[in-house]
Length: 157
Ligand SMILES: CC(C)(COP(=O)(O)OP(=O)(O)OC[C@H]1O[C@@H](n2cnc3c(N)ncnc32)[C@H](O)[C@@H]1OP(=O)(O)O)[C@@H](O)C(=O)NCCC(=O)NCCS
Image (tube, rainbow, N blue to C red; front, side, top):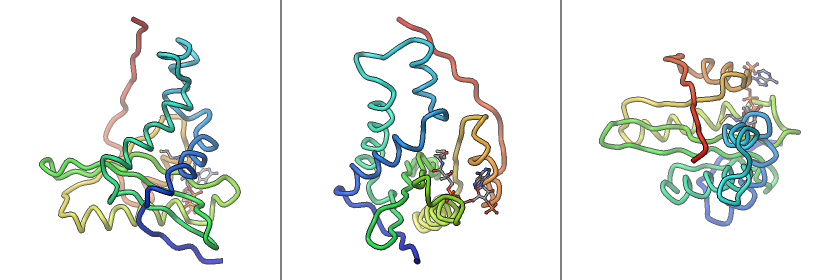
C-alpha cells in the first residue's frame, strides 16, 4: 500500500493528537517535568503535548503535513518558521507504532525540508531528547548535523 503526503487540514487535528499521545510516552519533556513536579495548572503532560500540536498547526497550518494510507492518517509532521531569521523548525513528528520502520518518518522530514526550501528559508532545525535514539539516527541520515546538547531546567513556583 502506498502512502500519500498532503497538507494538514483542521479536521486532521484530533487524529494527529491521538497519534501524538500514543507516540510520546517516555520521550516527552512534558512527561519528565510532570514526573518530577506533578501536574501543572491542573493539566497533565498529555494535555500539554496535545496542545503543542494544536498551537503549531494554528500558528503555521501550511507547514503541517499528514501521511495517509488507504485514506487513514498514519503520521504527521508539524513545523514552525522564523521567516526573518530564515529558519524552519521541525516541531513534532510521529508515525503510528505499527507502521514504523517503513520510511514514512523520513519521507515526512524530507517533505518538510522541501517545503522549507520553497519558502526561501536558509536553514532547518530539529531537536530530540538525548535518549531518543530513533530520532537521532533519523535526523542525521537526512542531513542534519548535531550542533549541541541543550539541558532543560525547571522549578516549581
Ligand atoms: C521517529 C519516527 C517518526 C520515525 O518514523 P519511521 O517511519 O519509523 O522512520 P523511518 O522508517 O523513516 O526510519 C528512518 C530511520 O530511523 C531510524 N530508525 C527507525 N526505526 C528505528 C528503531 N526502532 N531504532 C533506532 N533507529 C530507528 C533508522 O535510522 C531509519 O533508517 P533506516 O531505515 O536506514 O534504518 C517514529 O519512530 C515515531 O513516531 N517515534 C515516536 C515519536 C518520536 O520519537 N518523534 C520524533 C521526536 S519529535
